[in-house]
Image 1 (tube, rainbow, N blue to C red):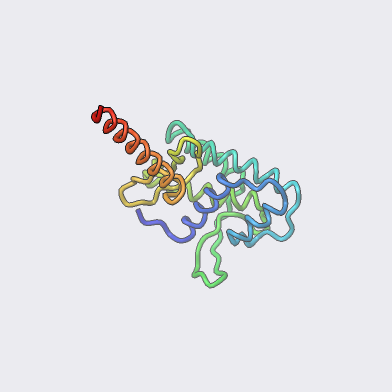
Image 2 (cartoon, one colour):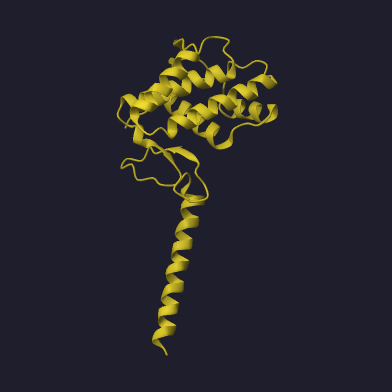
Length: 184
């Protein structure tokens, strides 16, 4: 699946928002800086609550039971965000589209760009790429952009590796128990 830079950036923001969820003004400021959210001038406490609300709504999209339900949730989010597609050129990137209105609050910015990125996946028939980590104690969100859609963990170096090591150790214990039983 071919995903352009803007869609990938928006999906990364959605996933990071789902997995970190800024809880205060400092964390929200760090989030906007980390994701280069450029329209934000002054962040306020009400922005933290609004972003938390958008986070919950993105979570419902990831966890939707059907494509129809996901589409309905995305449509609601796009409509409420006041989506206003605009061509933009900044920070060394060629012309691209932002979906939020000029001067939009950070929650509207995230809702518009993130919901449109999710809409593009849905329209392409790729909703199954929206996943939750298979590690029993994790549940983080991720977008599986692997060619064969085989990714199961939010991060192969942490969750994936931890589970593979645990499975290896369990097999070793089983083999050792078998060997000690055969030696009797």
